[in-house]
Length: 539
Image: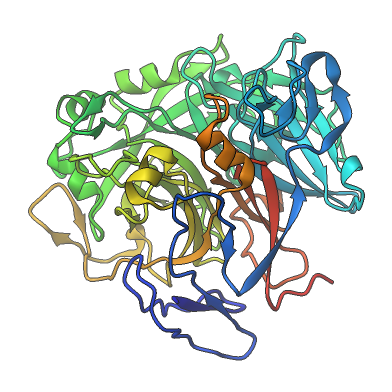
């Protein structure tokens, strides 16, 4: 098994095993540390499989699909945590079962001493936001409906991404659909963590696109990561999705407008890398260089829209403004201890072993800036995907150097690899940011950077299983259900709802009594889990 040690400062950099291969335990044991043991293999895609969690942690379910809402919207079928019952069908394991709603990303917040977990729901007839009361001991009283209508009383789209914006006092929700459906919505909460009016307001100035990841910074900017698959080519897909930053006119009121920017990467000769170039040549050598560890590229933000008009097509505007597309980036987070100067985001890639395109397996990228509002910066790949580690989706920092990344490989790739999804831990060490380097090497390609450092090797902290409901869906269930269980919603937070609690502002301490870790097992029974790291004191 692969091992590392987690202590007050983070996990030690002793992951002595090659990617995807289990070996004998090797670890450094020190005071105030405990051993994090890697799971050697992913679960095979055969029948019902249990989740296999690192022996360095335990987990408990905090909610599951058939829990009833304490305040259901019966007329619209929003009656259960993971099912919409509008069709009055049985909840699970039936060919005509109720439609799964798939709770997705998690936001943990503490209001008035009460501990809550908020989630948007990704599928079903309508979008909605639910809240789990983590202090409630009776499961039947644990889940509350926060919102399932927009400002006009109409249903809003299904929701993928979510974060808490303490400056505007609202949950920011993303609908992962192409324009004009996709976009960003806000749901205001009061000081008790309750919805002020239960309505989701579309934030037109942030544009309409297939947004998934959403994160804010200390300046009040909103960062958006888009996931829209491109046209098929070479057994994979061309880059077609962008990374955005919204700079508000008033960071306490996102309806007051502002400027939406998209990330642009520059070649070594200073030219922008554009969608037209990469889509006309999806084997452009730049893509391979971008996915090479040790390479880095200069970036700048280009403004693609300003004002407060009706929602606009952000994807089209980014393309027209010569921003640089990626192969399905999905989620991003700021690295703690960098004062919001390092932003890490995942790229899913092609989710197919048959792809012959460069960058097919995606990875994790690091965007480095002098400040979160800086106009220019550099980008480099922090973790390179491969056949055994790909389909990267949700992302969270467990400590200021240890990054949790989870897969959403999809059922097609599960079959190709005969392996279900995994969660990985990457020890990023004390690596200097690109902007702190005093020298660079001219590699004779489009990059500049220092390739003498070794790429981090991941330790598998979770081999996800497949529960009975997901297995039923794979064999004979409704065609709209995925026949696997997906890892999503990995989230580490102390629940601080103030500006000082924005993700990335504090160094996480997973052994401390206030820090908590959650993830959601989508599809199947739709269970949300809390992880307790061994040695942790709950207080």
